[in-house]
Image (cartoon, rainbow, N blue to C red; front, side, top):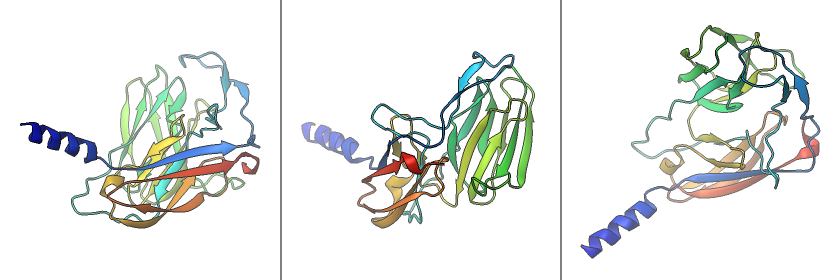
Amino acid sequence: MVRAFLLLILALATARADVTATVTITGAPNSPDETFIASASNCGEGSVRHTENWSIGPKGELGDVVVWIVDPKFGPNTPAAPEPEIKQIGCRYDPHVIAVVAGAPFKILNGDPTIHNVLARVFTGPTDPPGDTIFNLGQGHQGELDERQFDDAGIYTLQCNVHSWMQAWVRAFPTGCFAVTGADGQATLQLSAHLQDGTYKIDAWHPRFAAPLEQTITVKNGAASIAFQFQGPKSL
């Protein structure tokens, strides 16, 4: 009995292995994080708001960073990536940045007692005009839930024409080994426990930087850790 219990504890301790990333930023970003006036009814917040350019913790922890394995090789019986969801809450997109698998659906929820529309466009560069429209989805009532997808890998923006300050970023990938950092600058890459052992390129991207950072990482038994650091003065 004791041996069986110890084996169970060992199995639970070793059952989950993941690739994790820590992302920080040094220095003051070039692009501003300012207050602005956004007067609208049924948005659940006051008229004075902050931009969502940055989510930076007290020690430089950087949120809203997409981290991904560039060319993941999975073992057998790898499950499908979970379906993401983005919500419209308080006339903001929550989360501000998501990652999805190209060709797979993700959910869009209107959590507000007001009308929204979701205008999805291709993002081609910080100084380029808006790219092609992929879809323009109207959601007229609270609780309305729809599914959409991006067929091609790339970067996309979501905007609301009713509430002009609302914007979100979506990065679509061929496969699902990615994650987005939270406010603590931490991310655990989904499906990474199913990676084959080996050395991989791993990238990190934030919407306020023109290019991603790239490193290599060695995965053993589905586990590894990596740290990225963005330089604030180089931001857009």
